[in-house]
Image (tube, rainbow over all chains, first blue to last red; front, top):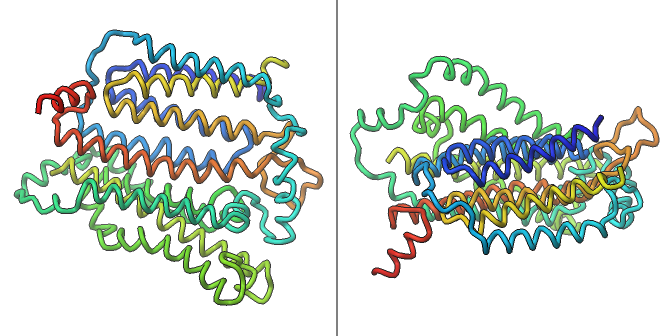
Length: 328
Length: 119
């Protein structure tokens, strides 16, 4: 049964991807890519990757779609018509795909427990997580503790991308003078649509609550800072879409966003430095408490919080940067 | 059955092919960014397909289950962070596209090249 289901999902993925590339209307391409992400998330879930599925659903289907729509509002919805097939790219892409398919015949079959990937490091993590970290979610344990240094790097990449968007779609342009009525007309958004507004308003607090649950329960169930950050950002973005970008920025003001952007990454790094000051290695949480596993719990909680704050800060900053351009 | 065991990897290859085609052949820059995200998603699928262990479950321990088989957590960690980094870099790319549109008035690459060669 699961096999049939996953075959169906994978085939749908290919169909949707072809439809995305084929569509001339970019709006429908973006909507289809939202569907693509959702299918991908279900696929990840079928493949036992609950944490990844949660991330993909929040980021791919939620935030990415809004960002692409924000960009479309600024660049135009229609792609120029072109002659249907371009042969050289088709040949190159097909050759690459053909080579990859040829290579798959050397792969271990799906789910083979003797595949090389399952024999090297992973068993060690599965065996030692209960003893060293004492939390049920092994993914969070590896992410935050065993490979905390990697994650710190990722957070800084996200942070840098946020800074990059800010410097490209600069802050200066907010100072363009427009009258209050004009501003209102441009930013009316969904305010005059009663049903989305009422329903959406009811959903915002619950999405935020779910984000907090995902954030602080990440050690025990699928979740953690990355997912929670994306979900929290999605709830504020929904609020901004419903009430207008200006209201959204009143709710989470600019200075707070800046603080979140840098503060989360700083918190993560600071935990590492505190570990060093207490006599351990960088990001070695054992020393944070007299009982090593409790130190690990505390460290994980703090760095996940840092991750969540930075991720939601960056996503919101990016959203506002696009929305502000559109309403200019 | 034996053949279907590689189906995930074939879908990975086909999605990669589609994404690569979109990145090379499409002239519209927004469309290219979408193609790039399909390409990216294909790679995510490859990694997550590798983590599956037959009869396994998500790598979250449960005290009431003894002797459960868990799937490999390591690729999941890699891809989880990669997804978020992916959206951040996509946003950066889109920001560049928006700036290009403001400077050139178009996001079609051939027109941008024309404008460049004219000046």
